[in-house]
Image (cartoon, rainbow, N blue to C red; front, side, top):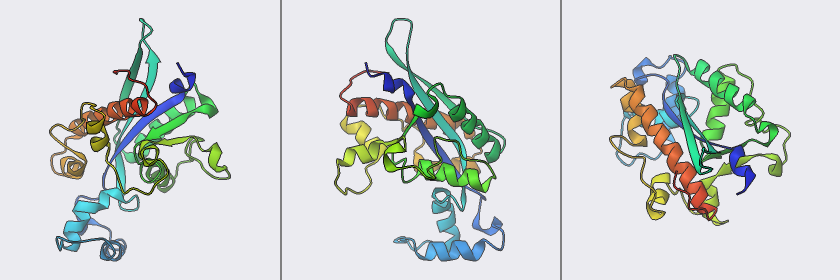
Length: 232
């Protein structure tokens, strides 16, 4: 068994708009969101306010991290490969990001730590980094790309692995889970429901459960992509 498997931290983040509605945005940000929205595809002809509720969460300038799921592989007492998943949340985004950064800095893999996420290079990794800077936090070594050569960046993106060098459009984690026959993380909510569940239902626990399931699917997908058929 490849010992590097135990250096991988599988992660998934859930995000929500910084404010419940567009009307609650600070006056300085309202015209900036309007400008942003004007460039976004809007086939349903949504209003600026509707687009804020529908899209703001995915942009780090207008959104926030509300939950982070992390998972690591280990050998149990029977020497079978298993996965430990933990979902992080906190009273404030800054505290949440500090707790996550602490996990990265204290991980036993140290400088050999590998971060794995689905579409992580376009979403999870930069989103986390930007929100850390906005919150006045120093980037942990695992996220700080400054001065690093491409081969020194220890980031694994399962969506990038699936491209095999071509330029496919976005392929969802749920679709890949389906084709690899991995149980889905989707139950009563999906990614598109998170902002509503957070702001309208105030049910962070439901989001944490969904996030944790995504981490488990991600880890199983990565193993399948490496030709390993362990069931976690």
